[in-house]
Length: 540
Image (cartoon, rainbow, N blue to C red; front, side, top):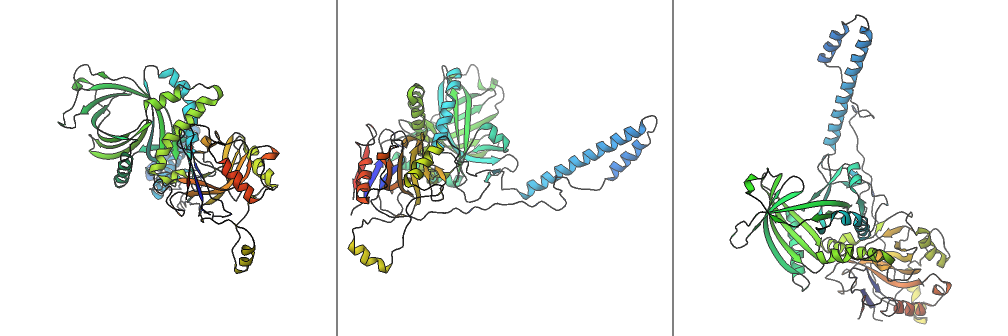
């Protein structure tokens, strides 16, 4: 029997792909090792962070000199001075201990908790966009609203090293607001390594080979001035001459950072207001000294909805080079989102579609960003999700899917006497895909919920109460060449448990042949996806 391949596409282009193999196959579930690193302080450092040290000769002399003041309340004064001296010594010891700890942990960075705190990145970005609408309405009049995603690293303010996860080997997507970044002592440092920058260049070259993107090149000298002002000079690519200095005001409204310890880089999504440029009045030399002067050499892949900018930057004062990767939504995409009303969830739907545009490019450059991330059972709709699959199968508190059975020689007569379906073996992670309680969740064999990008788009088109059984696999590996060029995570559905909340929507007690037909119909264009969400089906 030839397997069926299903791909969701169309207007909401970044839906998680659902493919269907009619099979009773079971894949192996990967396990991430988790180890907790511990830091041992020197023995001379106490639990409170103080280091015991002898009183210096200078401190002793100071105490003796002050002890001679004995008229009236001299004893009280002596006690106060002695206490102050001990406080100073304690402070000095604490600083030494802190320096010692910093030395011991150099290059390791601060720790960020990844204990089931992950969120679906595209949904987190969509929520950020929605939360910023009021500020945009208030401050964005007459300005171009810029929504951009930058690659970089969330770095410790103390050690100047990338922050590390609280558990090693854990896949996570932890969303951090500005106040949370300050709380963990972290900052976002944009840019990628020079050697890895070349791989991003190759990625953009691949985008430009298609018809969806066109190439754009530019060079600029940017003088960053106080009060969010910039003086920009475009450089002619032929003559290398600088153009007329233009003044631009750019005000950042807000940002969120996404910690991706299993990827080579983290992300920052920010929203800014760019006001129209105007010619500089007077000479550039008459302006106040710039905070920095940056020479930019940029190559961009420009599409209808977004552009990808690869920029080589030279800092004039230090002669230091850096390499930046940015994804910016087009003015059309931003305005389409902002123009949507709040009625019937239209603005949210537009926000999740818009955020998916950004995360699509992150997954293009860093495929591991498309993984599923473990979360807690504390989200809205968690009870409905658990009831949707546990109630159907009559098993509570554990994964209730069928488990793989080894094929032995004595099974051969049994197979010959009955009808079986056979399909390709996939090596992915087993999940239930559950749509219930206004959300969509993956549930693994340990009965833990997982978030993944694309699920919020999926719940908009799949009926409430749907439960599919399948595996999440990396496309292009282990099952042909259907998505070989994409290298993205795909959910392969091989069985169906329910297609709705009603009793008649349960298919648990039906034969597999009938469940297979229902699954095929369920994933058909007519049943699930209204235009323009087209369902493409390829038969092999």
